[in-house]
Image (cartoon, rainbow, N blue to C red; front, top):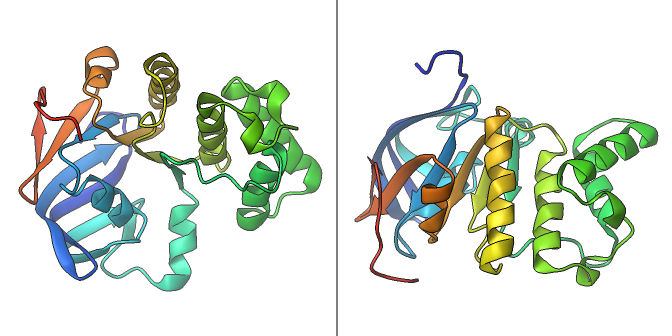
Length: 234
């Protein structure tokens, strides 16, 4: 056990299916609070499938899997929302609601997951927007923001419920290098403050700049490696 750290994910010889096909198998790993984890490998190697298994979207068909104390082989449908509230999810394509401004996007999430008063929700929205450097953008519509600004809003959305774990699927994939580095710096800061962050990425600059564990996905297996050089760009 990592000293002083909370065990968030424990997978022991896990196999995960997507569309009834096994995508990854024999996965054994522990992930603790405050860790920064990179998932690397070719397109289709199972990185996104692994992330989806953590929040119950892809079926775990073998092994033992515990996330936030929930046994994913036995979890009931009514329990799933309580697990997901402890997670923050960051998508490459943002998935912001285009018909409402930034504050309304964030308030939509809080109203769906929390019983706080309107004033409490507003205070929390102000807190997360300040944290990601977007205090003055709450009135903006998503289409009025740059890609980097939209991704900052997505990170703010992921932080609303004070998650113990953030899952990020190619969070810099649609961003230019400088903006991508800013986003990675923010995610690294979040991990340094105690929230575990798992990032699926093809950009191997990031582990060299922001130190973290590297999990290599290949041939349906997952292996922890000390470094990873790619000869492909997909």
